[in-house]
Image (cartoon, rainbow over all chains, first blue to last red; front, side, top):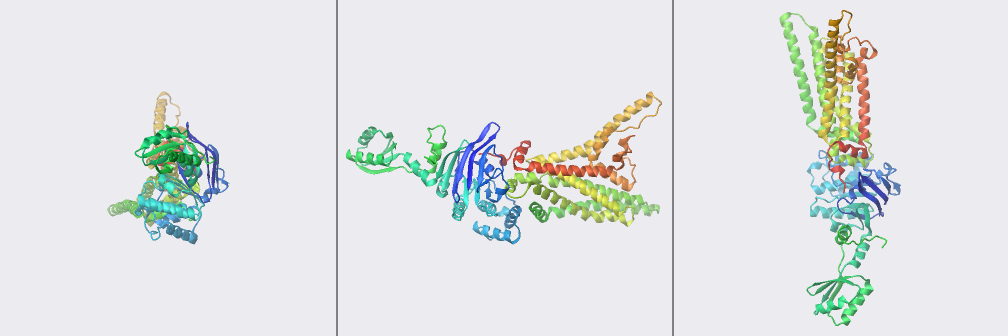
Length: 316
Length: 312
Protein backbone atom coordinates (compact mmCIF):
# COMPACT_ATOMS: atom_id res chain seq x y z
CA UNK A 1 0.00 0.00 0.00
CA UNK A 2 2.80 2.38 0.94
CA UNK A 3 6.34 1.96 -0.29
CA UNK A 4 9.14 4.44 0.40
CA UNK A 5 12.58 4.09 -1.11
CA UNK A 6 15.72 6.13 -0.51
CA UNK A 7 13.85 9.14 0.86
CA UNK A 8 16.16 12.04 1.68
CA UNK A 9 15.42 15.47 3.10
CA UNK A 10 17.78 18.14 4.36
CA UNK A 11 16.97 21.31 6.29
CA UNK A 12 20.09 23.41 5.82
CA UNK A 13 22.92 21.23 7.10
CA UNK A 14 20.63 19.00 9.12
CA UNK A 15 19.79 15.75 7.39
CA UNK A 16 16.29 14.89 8.63
CA UNK A 17 15.93 11.83 6.39
CA UNK A 18 18.98 10.00 5.11
CA UNK A 19 17.69 7.34 2.73
CA UNK A 20 14.49 6.14 4.40
CA UNK A 21 13.18 2.80 3.15
CA UNK A 22 9.82 1.60 4.38
CA UNK A 23 7.08 -0.72 3.18
CA UNK A 24 3.58 -1.03 4.59
CA UNK A 25 1.47 -3.95 3.42
CA UNK A 26 -2.21 -3.51 2.62
CA UNK A 27 -4.39 -3.99 5.71
CA UNK A 28 -1.49 -3.51 8.13
CA UNK A 29 -1.59 -1.39 11.26
CA UNK A 30 1.93 -0.06 11.08
CA UNK A 31 3.54 1.53 14.13
CA UNK A 32 6.06 4.17 13.15
CA UNK A 33 8.29 4.92 16.12
CA UNK A 34 11.50 6.73 16.81
CA UNK A 35 13.07 9.19 19.22
CA UNK A 36 12.50 12.93 18.92
CA UNK A 37 14.29 14.32 15.87
CA UNK A 38 14.48 10.92 14.18
CA UNK A 39 12.49 12.13 11.17
CA UNK A 40 9.00 10.73 11.79
CA UNK A 41 7.06 13.93 11.19
CA UNK A 42 9.26 14.87 8.23
CA UNK A 43 8.54 11.49 6.65
CA UNK A 44 4.81 11.83 7.33
CA UNK A 45 4.74 15.35 5.89
CA UNK A 46 6.42 14.09 2.72
CA UNK A 47 3.99 11.16 2.44
CA UNK A 48 1.03 13.53 2.77
CA UNK A 49 2.44 16.01 0.24
CA UNK A 50 3.05 18.82 2.73
CA UNK A 51 6.79 18.76 2.15
CA UNK A 52 8.95 18.06 -0.86
CA UNK A 53 11.60 15.38 -0.69
CA UNK A 54 15.15 16.01 -1.92
CA UNK A 55 15.49 12.45 -3.22
CA UNK A 56 13.63 9.16 -3.22
CA UNK A 57 10.23 7.79 -4.09
CA UNK A 58 6.95 7.44 -2.24
CA UNK A 59 4.42 5.05 -3.76
CA UNK A 60 0.86 5.08 -2.42
CA UNK A 61 -1.41 2.40 -3.82
CA UNK A 62 1.04 1.89 -6.70
CA UNK A 63 1.10 5.58 -7.68
CA UNK A 64 4.10 7.86 -7.30
CA UNK A 65 2.98 10.31 -4.61
CA UNK A 66 5.82 12.76 -5.27
CA UNK A 67 5.15 13.03 -9.00
CA UNK A 68 1.36 12.77 -8.92
CA UNK A 69 0.57 14.38 -5.58
CA UNK A 70 -2.89 15.52 -6.71
CA UNK A 71 -3.94 12.08 -7.91
CA UNK A 72 -2.97 10.31 -4.69
CA UNK A 73 -4.91 12.68 -2.43
CA UNK A 74 -7.91 10.38 -2.68
CA UNK A 75 -5.80 7.45 -1.52
CA UNK A 76 -4.93 8.66 1.98
CA UNK A 77 -6.40 10.48 4.96
CA UNK A 78 -4.22 12.43 7.37
CA UNK A 79 -4.64 13.07 11.09
CA UNK A 80 -1.95 15.45 12.35
CA UNK A 81 -0.83 15.76 15.95
CA UNK A 82 -2.62 19.13 16.14
CA UNK A 83 -6.38 18.75 15.74
CA UNK A 84 -6.99 21.33 13.01
CA UNK A 85 -10.57 22.12 14.01
CA UNK A 86 -12.94 25.01 13.44
CA UNK A 87 -14.37 25.72 16.87
CA UNK A 88 -17.20 27.84 15.48
CA UNK A 89 -18.59 25.06 13.27
CA UNK A 90 -20.98 22.34 14.28
CA UNK A 91 -19.80 18.75 14.01
CA UNK A 92 -21.77 18.00 10.82
CA UNK A 93 -20.71 21.34 9.29
CA UNK A 94 -17.08 20.47 9.91
CA UNK A 95 -17.54 17.11 8.23
CA UNK A 96 -19.53 18.67 5.41
CA UNK A 97 -16.79 21.24 4.77
CA UNK A 98 -14.11 18.59 4.32
CA UNK A 99 -16.49 16.46 2.26
CA UNK A 100 -16.86 19.38 -0.16
CA UNK A 101 -13.05 19.82 -0.15
CA UNK A 102 -12.97 16.34 -1.70
CA UNK A 103 -15.75 17.22 -4.13
CA UNK A 104 -18.46 15.35 -2.21
CA UNK A 105 -21.78 17.08 -1.76
CA UNK A 106 -25.48 16.57 -1.17
CA UNK A 107 -26.89 13.25 -0.06
CA UNK A 108 -23.65 11.34 -0.67
CA UNK A 109 -21.74 13.64 1.69
CA UNK A 110 -24.51 13.60 4.29
CA UNK A 111 -24.76 9.79 4.31
CA UNK A 112 -21.01 9.44 4.52
CA UNK A 113 -20.86 11.91 7.46
CA UNK A 114 -23.63 10.06 9.32
CA UNK A 115 -21.94 6.69 8.82
CA UNK A 116 -18.54 7.94 9.93
CA UNK A 117 -19.86 9.76 12.98
CA UNK A 118 -21.59 6.54 14.01
CA UNK A 119 -18.37 4.61 13.44
CA UNK A 120 -16.34 6.95 15.66
CA UNK A 121 -19.14 6.97 18.25
CA UNK A 122 -20.13 10.60 17.72
CA UNK A 123 -23.66 9.86 16.55
CA UNK A 124 -26.06 12.31 18.21
CA UNK A 125 -23.37 14.99 18.42
CA UNK A 126 -23.97 16.35 14.90
CA UNK A 127 -25.49 19.61 16.13
CA UNK A 128 -22.83 20.18 18.81
CA UNK A 129 -20.27 22.88 18.23
CA UNK A 130 -16.78 21.44 17.80
CA UNK A 131 -15.59 23.66 20.65
CA UNK A 132 -17.87 21.86 23.09
CA UNK A 133 -16.41 18.38 22.46
CA UNK A 134 -13.94 16.68 24.80
CA UNK A 135 -10.37 16.07 23.64
CA UNK A 136 -11.06 12.41 22.93
CA UNK A 137 -14.16 13.30 20.91
CA UNK A 138 -12.23 15.92 18.96
CA UNK A 139 -9.60 13.34 18.05
CA UNK A 140 -12.29 10.88 16.93
CA UNK A 141 -13.88 13.66 14.88
CA UNK A 142 -10.49 14.25 13.23
CA UNK A 143 -10.30 10.57 12.40
CA UNK A 144 -13.79 10.65 10.89
CA UNK A 145 -12.80 13.73 8.89
CA UNK A 146 -9.73 11.95 7.56
CA UNK A 147 -11.96 9.11 6.30
CA UNK A 148 -14.60 11.30 4.66
CA UNK A 149 -13.43 10.36 1.16
CA UNK A 150 -13.04 6.69 2.07
CA UNK A 151 -9.24 6.44 1.68
CA UNK A 152 -7.42 3.11 1.77
CA UNK A 153 -4.52 4.51 3.79
CA UNK A 154 -4.72 6.48 7.03
CA UNK A 155 -1.67 8.37 8.29
CA UNK A 156 -1.83 9.38 11.93
CA UNK A 157 0.83 11.50 13.59
CA UNK A 158 0.89 11.07 17.39
CA UNK A 159 -2.91 10.68 17.52
CA UNK A 160 -3.21 9.88 21.22
CA UNK A 161 -0.93 12.55 22.66
CA UNK A 162 -2.61 14.45 25.46
CA UNK A 163 -5.52 12.02 25.73
CA UNK A 164 -6.59 10.41 29.01
CA UNK A 165 -6.22 6.60 29.40
CA UNK A 166 -9.87 5.86 28.63
CA UNK A 167 -9.85 7.97 25.46
CA UNK A 168 -6.58 6.30 24.43
CA UNK A 169 -7.99 2.82 24.88
CA UNK A 170 -11.15 3.73 22.95
CA UNK A 171 -9.09 5.25 20.15
CA UNK A 172 -6.85 2.19 20.02
CA UNK A 173 -9.89 -0.08 19.72
CA UNK A 174 -11.25 2.14 16.96
CA UNK A 175 -8.03 1.80 14.99
CA UNK A 176 -8.13 -1.98 15.41
CA UNK A 177 -11.70 -2.00 14.07
CA UNK A 178 -10.71 0.09 11.06
CA UNK A 179 -7.78 -2.20 10.38
CA UNK A 180 -10.11 -5.20 10.56
CA UNK A 181 -12.31 -3.48 7.97
CA UNK A 182 -9.38 -3.39 5.58
CA UNK A 183 -7.88 0.05 6.09
CA UNK A 184 -4.11 0.36 6.08
CA UNK A 185 -3.01 2.52 8.98
CA UNK A 186 0.35 4.15 9.67
CA UNK A 187 0.48 5.51 13.18
CA UNK A 188 3.37 7.28 14.81
CA UNK A 189 3.46 7.35 18.58
CA UNK A 190 5.77 7.59 21.56
CA UNK A 191 3.60 5.28 23.65
CA UNK A 192 5.31 2.03 22.77
CA UNK A 193 3.25 -0.30 24.94
CA UNK A 194 0.16 0.94 23.14
CA UNK A 195 1.67 0.32 19.72
CA UNK A 196 2.84 -3.14 20.79
CA UNK A 197 -0.73 -4.05 21.71
CA UNK A 198 -2.41 -2.88 18.54
CA UNK A 199 0.10 -2.86 15.66
CA UNK A 200 0.58 -5.74 13.29
CA UNK A 201 3.82 -4.29 11.91
CA UNK A 202 6.38 -1.84 13.13
CA UNK A 203 9.16 0.36 11.82
CA UNK A 204 11.69 2.01 14.09
CA UNK A 205 13.30 5.12 12.65
CA UNK A 206 16.52 6.60 13.96
CA UNK A 207 18.64 9.39 12.48
CA UNK A 208 16.46 9.50 9.37
CA UNK A 209 16.64 5.78 8.57
CA UNK A 210 14.56 2.72 9.38
CA UNK A 211 16.73 0.62 11.67
CA UNK A 212 14.22 -2.13 12.36
CA UNK A 213 11.03 -3.10 10.64
CA UNK A 214 8.77 -6.06 10.15
CA UNK A 215 5.93 -8.04 11.67
CA UNK A 216 5.48 -7.27 15.36
CA UNK A 217 5.29 -10.93 16.46
CA UNK A 218 8.40 -11.90 14.52
CA UNK A 219 10.38 -8.98 15.85
CA UNK A 220 9.46 -9.72 19.44
CA UNK A 221 10.42 -13.36 18.87
CA UNK A 222 13.80 -12.35 17.48
CA UNK A 223 14.42 -10.07 20.40
CA UNK A 224 13.49 -12.90 22.75
CA UNK A 225 16.51 -14.81 21.47
CA UNK A 226 18.83 -12.03 22.55
CA UNK A 227 17.20 -11.56 25.95
CA UNK A 228 18.79 -13.10 29.08
CA UNK A 229 17.80 -16.50 30.51
CA UNK A 230 16.46 -16.52 34.04
CA UNK A 231 17.32 -19.67 36.04
CA UNK A 232 15.59 -20.29 39.37
CA UNK A 233 17.73 -22.48 41.58
CA UNK A 234 16.35 -24.38 44.60
CA UNK A 235 19.68 -24.17 46.53
CA UNK A 236 23.47 -24.07 45.94
CA UNK A 237 23.27 -20.88 43.89
CA UNK A 238 27.03 -20.32 43.92
CA UNK A 239 27.75 -23.85 42.77
CA UNK A 240 25.48 -23.16 39.82
CA UNK A 241 27.32 -19.89 39.16
CA UNK A 242 30.66 -21.72 39.29
CA UNK A 243 29.42 -24.15 36.66
CA UNK A 244 27.91 -21.45 34.43
CA UNK A 245 31.25 -19.61 34.35
CA UNK A 246 32.74 -22.56 32.53
CA UNK A 247 30.14 -22.47 29.75
CA UNK A 248 31.38 -20.66 26.59
CA UNK A 249 27.91 -19.35 25.51
CA UNK A 250 27.34 -17.58 28.83
CA UNK A 251 28.31 -13.91 28.53
CA UNK A 252 27.14 -12.36 31.80
CA UNK A 253 25.86 -13.66 35.11
CA UNK A 254 23.76 -11.69 37.60
CA UNK A 255 22.56 -13.19 40.85
CA UNK A 256 19.23 -11.99 42.27
CA UNK A 257 18.52 -14.06 45.40
CA UNK A 258 17.87 -17.61 44.18
CA UNK A 259 17.55 -16.38 40.59
CA UNK A 260 20.46 -16.27 38.18
CA UNK A 261 20.08 -14.03 35.15
CA UNK A 262 22.36 -15.21 32.38
CA UNK A 263 23.31 -13.36 29.24
CA UNK A 264 23.34 -16.29 26.83
CA UNK A 265 24.19 -16.37 23.16
CA UNK A 266 22.76 -19.52 21.72
CA UNK A 267 19.72 -21.03 20.11
CA UNK A 268 17.04 -23.33 21.49
CA UNK A 269 19.33 -26.39 21.28
CA UNK A 270 22.07 -24.68 23.26
CA UNK A 271 19.49 -23.61 25.85
CA UNK A 272 18.28 -27.21 26.22
CA UNK A 273 21.87 -28.42 26.48
CA UNK A 274 22.61 -25.89 29.22
CA UNK A 275 19.56 -27.02 31.20
CA UNK A 276 20.55 -30.66 30.82
CA UNK A 277 24.11 -29.92 32.01
CA UNK A 278 22.81 -28.08 35.08
CA UNK A 279 20.57 -31.01 35.97
CA UNK A 280 23.44 -33.44 35.37
CA UNK A 281 25.52 -31.44 37.88
CA UNK A 282 22.83 -32.09 40.51
CA UNK A 283 21.78 -28.44 40.63
CA UNK A 284 18.11 -28.21 41.63
CA UNK A 285 16.33 -26.15 39.00
CA UNK A 286 12.75 -25.02 39.54
CA UNK A 287 12.55 -22.49 36.72
CA UNK A 288 14.33 -21.90 33.40
CA UNK A 289 13.08 -19.44 30.77
CA UNK A 290 14.01 -16.65 28.42
CA UNK A 291 13.00 -13.19 29.68
CA UNK A 292 10.18 -11.93 27.42
CA UNK A 293 11.10 -9.09 25.07
CA UNK A 294 8.93 -6.02 24.58
CA UNK A 295 8.84 -3.08 22.21
CA UNK A 296 10.36 -0.77 24.78
CA UNK A 297 13.42 -2.98 25.23
CA UNK A 298 13.87 -3.16 21.44
CA UNK A 299 13.44 0.58 21.13
CA UNK A 300 15.94 1.28 23.88
CA UNK A 301 18.47 -1.15 22.42
CA UNK A 302 18.21 0.38 18.98
CA UNK A 303 17.95 4.05 19.69
CA UNK A 304 20.34 4.43 22.61
CA UNK A 305 23.48 5.60 20.84
CA UNK A 306 25.65 5.47 24.00
CA UNK A 307 25.14 1.75 24.46
CA UNK A 308 26.35 -1.09 22.33
CA UNK A 309 23.53 -1.56 19.87
CA UNK A 310 21.80 -4.61 18.51
CA UNK A 311 20.75 -3.58 15.04
CA UNK A 312 18.35 -5.98 13.44
CA UNK A 313 16.69 -5.89 10.10
CA UNK A 314 13.65 -7.73 8.90
CA UNK A 315 15.86 -9.90 6.69
CA UNK A 316 17.74 -11.28 9.72
CA UNK B 1 -18.57 30.67 -6.04
CA UNK B 2 -21.51 28.68 -4.64
CA UNK B 3 -19.42 25.53 -4.94
CA UNK B 4 -16.33 26.95 -3.28
CA UNK B 5 -16.14 25.17 0.12
CA UNK B 6 -14.06 27.93 1.73
CA UNK B 7 -16.51 30.63 0.60
CA UNK B 8 -19.48 28.60 1.83
CA UNK B 9 -17.86 27.98 5.22
CA UNK B 10 -16.78 31.59 5.66
CA UNK B 11 -20.24 32.88 4.82
CA UNK B 12 -21.81 30.37 7.19
CA UNK B 13 -19.57 31.43 10.06
CA UNK B 14 -19.88 35.14 9.28
CA UNK B 15 -23.68 34.97 9.01
CA UNK B 16 -23.84 33.23 12.37
CA UNK B 17 -21.63 35.79 14.05
CA UNK B 18 -23.10 38.80 15.83
CA UNK B 19 -20.37 40.92 14.25
CA UNK B 20 -22.11 41.37 10.88
CA UNK B 21 -25.30 43.04 12.17
CA UNK B 22 -23.21 45.02 14.62
CA UNK B 23 -20.86 46.32 11.90
CA UNK B 24 -23.84 47.13 9.64
CA UNK B 25 -25.53 48.99 12.45
CA UNK B 26 -22.44 51.00 13.45
CA UNK B 27 -21.43 51.65 9.83
CA UNK B 28 -24.87 52.85 8.75
CA UNK B 29 -25.39 54.61 12.07
CA UNK B 30 -22.31 56.76 11.50
CA UNK B 31 -23.33 57.51 7.91
CA UNK B 32 -26.94 58.28 8.89
CA UNK B 33 -25.95 60.61 11.72
CA UNK B 34 -23.55 62.52 9.43
CA UNK B 35 -26.13 62.72 6.62
CA UNK B 36 -29.00 63.80 8.84
CA UNK B 37 -26.89 66.44 10.61
CA UNK B 38 -25.83 67.78 7.23
CA UNK B 39 -29.45 67.89 6.03
CA UNK B 40 -30.56 69.55 9.26
CA UNK B 41 -27.88 72.22 8.77
CA UNK B 42 -28.95 72.81 5.15
CA UNK B 43 -32.62 73.13 6.07
CA UNK B 44 -31.78 75.44 8.97
CA UNK B 45 -29.90 77.60 6.48
CA UNK B 46 -33.00 77.67 4.24
CA UNK B 47 -35.07 78.92 7.18
CA UNK B 48 -32.61 81.74 7.84
CA UNK B 49 -31.73 82.87 4.32
CA UNK B 50 -34.85 81.79 2.44
CA UNK B 51 -32.72 80.30 -0.36
CA UNK B 52 -31.83 76.70 -1.11
CA UNK B 53 -28.12 76.06 -1.64
CA UNK B 54 -27.98 72.92 -3.81
CA UNK B 55 -24.23 72.59 -3.40
CA UNK B 56 -24.90 71.70 0.24
CA UNK B 57 -26.59 68.48 -0.93
CA UNK B 58 -23.69 67.75 -3.25
CA UNK B 59 -21.38 68.22 -0.30
CA UNK B 60 -23.54 65.82 1.65
CA UNK B 61 -23.18 63.26 -1.15
CA UNK B 62 -19.41 63.78 -1.29
CA UNK B 63 -19.09 63.62 2.45
CA UNK B 64 -21.13 60.43 2.88
CA UNK B 65 -19.45 58.76 -0.10
CA UNK B 66 -15.96 59.67 1.14
CA UNK B 67 -16.72 58.51 4.66
CA UNK B 68 -18.03 55.23 3.26
CA UNK B 69 -14.90 54.75 1.13
CA UNK B 70 -12.61 55.44 4.09
CA UNK B 71 -14.49 52.94 6.24
CA UNK B 72 -14.25 50.36 3.44
CA UNK B 73 -10.50 50.94 3.19
CA UNK B 74 -10.15 50.27 6.91
CA UNK B 75 -12.56 47.34 7.16
CA UNK B 76 -11.51 45.30 4.11
CA UNK B 77 -7.88 44.70 5.21
CA UNK B 78 -9.13 43.80 8.68
CA UNK B 79 -11.36 41.12 7.16
CA UNK B 80 -8.66 39.62 4.94
CA UNK B 81 -5.27 40.18 6.55
CA UNK B 82 -5.72 37.42 9.13
CA UNK B 83 -7.74 35.05 7.00
CA UNK B 84 -5.05 32.67 5.75
CA UNK B 85 -2.57 33.18 8.58
CA UNK B 86 -5.47 32.40 10.92
CA UNK B 87 -5.99 29.07 9.15
CA UNK B 88 -2.28 28.43 9.51
CA UNK B 89 -2.40 29.19 13.23
CA UNK B 90 -5.37 26.83 13.67
CA UNK B 91 -3.46 24.11 11.75
CA UNK B 92 -6.38 23.78 9.35
CA UNK B 93 -4.47 25.02 6.32
CA UNK B 94 -2.34 21.87 6.22
CA UNK B 95 -5.45 19.76 6.35
CA UNK B 96 -6.85 21.61 3.36
CA UNK B 97 -3.56 21.03 1.50
CA UNK B 98 -4.06 17.29 1.89
CA UNK B 99 -7.51 17.51 0.26
CA UNK B 100 -8.44 18.12 -3.37
CA UNK B 101 -9.05 21.83 -2.83
CA UNK B 102 -6.67 24.08 -4.76
CA UNK B 103 -4.81 27.08 -3.29
CA UNK B 104 -6.58 29.41 -5.72
CA UNK B 105 -9.94 28.24 -4.36
CA UNK B 106 -8.80 28.98 -0.80
CA UNK B 107 -7.61 32.49 -1.72
CA UNK B 108 -10.63 33.37 -3.85
CA UNK B 109 -13.04 31.89 -1.27
CA UNK B 110 -11.49 33.98 1.49
CA UNK B 111 -11.37 37.17 -0.58
CA UNK B 112 -14.88 36.82 -1.93
CA UNK B 113 -16.41 36.14 1.48
CA UNK B 114 -14.83 39.35 2.82
CA UNK B 115 -15.89 41.16 -0.34
CA UNK B 116 -19.47 39.91 0.01
CA UNK B 117 -19.57 41.21 3.54
CA UNK B 118 -18.32 44.58 2.33
CA UNK B 119 -20.93 44.67 -0.40
CA UNK B 120 -23.62 44.06 2.21
CA UNK B 121 -22.37 47.23 3.89
CA UNK B 122 -22.35 49.17 0.60
CA UNK B 123 -25.81 48.04 -0.43
CA UNK B 124 -27.27 48.62 3.02
CA UNK B 125 -25.90 52.17 3.01
CA UNK B 126 -27.32 53.06 -0.44
CA UNK B 127 -30.54 54.60 0.97
CA UNK B 128 -28.42 57.08 2.95
CA UNK B 129 -26.34 57.92 -0.11
CA UNK B 130 -29.53 58.38 -2.12
CA UNK B 131 -30.75 61.13 0.16
CA UNK B 132 -29.01 63.36 -2.37
CA UNK B 133 -31.46 62.25 -5.06
CA UNK B 134 -34.22 64.08 -3.22
CA UNK B 135 -32.73 67.28 -4.60
CA UNK B 136 -31.15 65.85 -7.77
CA UNK B 137 -27.77 66.97 -9.21
CA UNK B 138 -26.22 63.45 -9.06
CA UNK B 139 -27.05 61.10 -11.90
CA UNK B 140 -27.49 57.35 -11.68
CA UNK B 141 -24.38 57.08 -13.92
CA UNK B 142 -22.38 58.92 -11.26
CA UNK B 143 -23.66 56.46 -8.69
CA UNK B 144 -22.63 53.50 -10.87
CA UNK B 145 -19.10 54.87 -11.22
CA UNK B 146 -19.01 55.40 -7.47
CA UNK B 147 -20.00 51.76 -6.92
CA UNK B 148 -17.34 50.60 -9.37
CA UNK B 149 -14.73 52.57 -7.42
CA UNK B 150 -15.97 50.92 -4.20
CA UNK B 151 -15.68 47.48 -5.76
CA UNK B 152 -12.17 48.06 -7.16
CA UNK B 153 -10.99 49.81 -3.99
CA UNK B 154 -12.33 46.98 -1.80
CA UNK B 155 -10.70 44.32 -4.00
CA UNK B 156 -7.43 46.26 -3.99
CA UNK B 157 -7.26 46.57 -0.21
CA UNK B 158 -8.64 43.05 0.29
CA UNK B 159 -6.21 41.36 -2.08
CA UNK B 160 -3.32 43.17 -0.40
CA UNK B 161 -4.54 41.78 2.94
CA UNK B 162 -4.85 38.26 1.49
CA UNK B 163 -1.35 38.51 0.00
CA UNK B 164 0.18 39.53 3.35
CA UNK B 165 -1.83 36.82 5.08
CA UNK B 166 -0.55 34.19 2.69
CA UNK B 167 3.03 35.37 3.10
CA UNK B 168 3.07 35.68 6.89
CA UNK B 169 2.76 32.86 9.34
CA UNK B 170 1.20 34.94 12.09
CA UNK B 171 -1.89 37.10 11.91
CA UNK B 172 -0.28 39.90 13.93
CA UNK B 173 2.55 40.24 11.40
CA UNK B 174 0.06 40.07 8.57
CA UNK B 175 -2.08 42.85 10.06
CA UNK B 176 0.93 45.07 10.66
CA UNK B 177 2.31 44.52 7.15
CA UNK B 178 -1.08 45.14 5.49
CA UNK B 179 -1.80 48.39 7.31
CA UNK B 180 1.86 49.43 6.93
CA UNK B 181 1.64 49.07 3.14
CA UNK B 182 -1.73 50.82 3.12
CA UNK B 183 -0.19 53.70 5.05
CA UNK B 184 2.71 53.96 2.60
CA UNK B 185 0.38 53.80 -0.42
CA UNK B 186 -2.23 56.24 0.89
CA UNK B 187 -0.28 58.69 3.05
CA UNK B 188 3.28 58.03 1.85
CA UNK B 189 2.72 58.70 -1.85
CA UNK B 190 0.71 61.84 -1.06
CA UNK B 191 3.30 63.20 1.37
CA UNK B 192 6.12 62.46 -1.09
CA UNK B 193 4.33 64.55 -3.71
CA UNK B 194 3.67 67.34 -1.23
CA UNK B 195 7.38 67.32 -0.31
CA UNK B 196 8.55 67.37 -3.93
CA UNK B 197 6.03 70.10 -4.76
CA UNK B 198 7.41 72.25 -1.93
CA UNK B 199 10.97 71.77 -3.20
CA UNK B 200 9.80 72.67 -6.71
CA UNK B 201 8.03 75.81 -5.43
CA UNK B 202 11.19 76.88 -3.59
CA UNK B 203 13.33 76.37 -6.69
CA UNK B 204 10.86 78.30 -8.86
CA UNK B 205 10.63 81.23 -6.47
CA UNK B 206 14.49 81.40 -6.51
CA UNK B 207 14.37 81.36 -10.34
CA UNK B 208 11.75 84.12 -10.30
CA UNK B 209 14.04 86.34 -8.28
CA UNK B 210 16.95 85.83 -10.69
CA UNK B 211 15.18 86.27 -14.02
CA UNK B 212 12.20 88.07 -15.38
CA UNK B 213 11.44 85.39 -17.94
CA UNK B 214 8.41 83.07 -18.03
CA UNK B 215 8.84 80.50 -15.30
CA UNK B 216 7.18 77.05 -15.18
CA UNK B 217 4.52 76.10 -12.65
CA UNK B 218 5.67 74.15 -9.62
CA UNK B 219 5.09 70.40 -9.85
CA UNK B 220 6.06 67.23 -8.03
CA UNK B 221 7.50 65.76 -11.28
CA UNK B 222 7.07 62.15 -12.40
CA UNK B 223 6.35 61.02 -8.83
CA UNK B 224 2.81 62.28 -9.37
CA UNK B 225 2.17 59.02 -11.21
CA UNK B 226 2.77 57.13 -7.95
CA UNK B 227 -0.58 58.59 -6.91
CA UNK B 228 -2.19 56.25 -9.43
CA UNK B 229 -1.61 53.55 -6.79
CA UNK B 230 -3.38 55.61 -4.17
CA UNK B 231 -7.07 54.65 -3.84
CA UNK B 232 -7.84 57.70 -1.69
CA UNK B 233 -6.53 60.09 -4.36
CA UNK B 234 -8.44 58.20 -7.04
CA UNK B 235 -11.62 58.56 -5.01
CA UNK B 236 -11.01 62.23 -4.23
CA UNK B 237 -10.47 62.88 -7.93
CA UNK B 238 -13.66 60.99 -8.76
CA UNK B 239 -15.72 62.96 -6.25
CA UNK B 240 -14.23 66.22 -7.42
CA UNK B 241 -15.16 65.38 -11.00
CA UNK B 242 -18.70 64.51 -9.92
CA UNK B 243 -19.30 67.32 -7.46
CA UNK B 244 -17.13 70.24 -8.60
CA UNK B 245 -16.43 69.23 -12.20
CA UNK B 246 -12.69 68.92 -11.45
CA UNK B 247 -10.18 71.64 -10.65
CA UNK B 248 -10.31 71.29 -6.88
CA UNK B 249 -7.46 71.96 -4.55
CA UNK B 250 -7.03 68.54 -2.99
CA UNK B 251 -6.34 66.23 -5.89
CA UNK B 252 -3.64 65.75 -8.48
CA UNK B 253 -4.09 69.05 -10.33
CA UNK B 254 -1.90 70.94 -7.90
CA UNK B 255 0.94 68.42 -8.29
CA UNK B 256 0.94 68.47 -12.09
CA UNK B 257 2.25 71.96 -12.81
CA UNK B 258 2.78 72.17 -16.59
CA UNK B 259 2.94 68.36 -16.90
CA UNK B 260 -0.78 67.78 -17.22
CA UNK B 261 -2.84 67.31 -20.33
CA UNK B 262 -1.73 63.80 -21.29
CA UNK B 263 -3.81 60.65 -21.63
CA UNK B 264 -3.20 59.54 -18.07
CA UNK B 265 -3.89 62.83 -16.34
CA UNK B 266 -6.97 63.41 -18.46
CA UNK B 267 -8.37 59.99 -17.51
CA UNK B 268 -6.88 59.76 -14.05
CA UNK B 269 -9.75 57.90 -12.35
CA UNK B 270 -10.03 55.31 -15.10
CA UNK B 271 -6.25 54.72 -15.22
CA UNK B 272 -6.04 54.47 -11.46
CA UNK B 273 -8.93 51.99 -11.35
CA UNK B 274 -7.28 49.86 -14.04
CA UNK B 275 -3.91 49.88 -12.22
CA UNK B 276 -5.57 48.98 -8.93
CA UNK B 277 -7.48 46.15 -10.61
CA UNK B 278 -4.26 44.84 -12.18
CA UNK B 279 -2.45 45.05 -8.84
CA UNK B 280 -5.35 43.21 -7.20
CA UNK B 281 -4.92 40.36 -9.68
CA UNK B 282 -1.16 40.34 -9.00
CA UNK B 283 -1.73 40.24 -5.24
CA UNK B 284 -4.15 37.34 -5.65
CA UNK B 285 -1.65 35.52 -7.87
CA UNK B 286 1.08 36.18 -5.28
CA UNK B 287 -1.16 34.89 -2.50
CA UNK B 288 -1.81 31.68 -4.44
CA UNK B 289 1.91 31.31 -5.20
CA UNK B 290 2.92 31.60 -1.54
CA UNK B 291 0.09 29.35 -0.41
CA UNK B 292 1.49 26.17 -1.95
CA UNK B 293 2.55 23.73 0.82
CA UNK B 294 6.30 23.92 0.26
CA UNK B 295 6.10 27.65 -0.39
CA UNK B 296 4.06 28.26 2.73
CA UNK B 297 6.78 26.59 4.75
CA UNK B 298 9.39 28.92 3.34
CA UNK B 299 7.06 31.83 3.98
CA UNK B 300 7.29 30.95 7.65
CA UNK B 301 10.76 32.44 7.78
CA UNK B 302 9.17 35.90 7.68
CA UNK B 303 7.32 35.31 10.94
CA UNK B 304 8.27 33.33 13.99
CA UNK B 305 7.55 29.65 13.37
CA UNK B 306 4.64 27.99 15.11
CA UNK B 307 4.01 24.31 15.58
CA UNK B 308 3.46 23.61 11.92
CA UNK B 309 7.13 23.73 11.05
CA UNK B 310 8.09 21.27 13.73
CA UNK B 311 10.14 18.23 12.86
CA UNK B 312 10.58 15.09 14.87
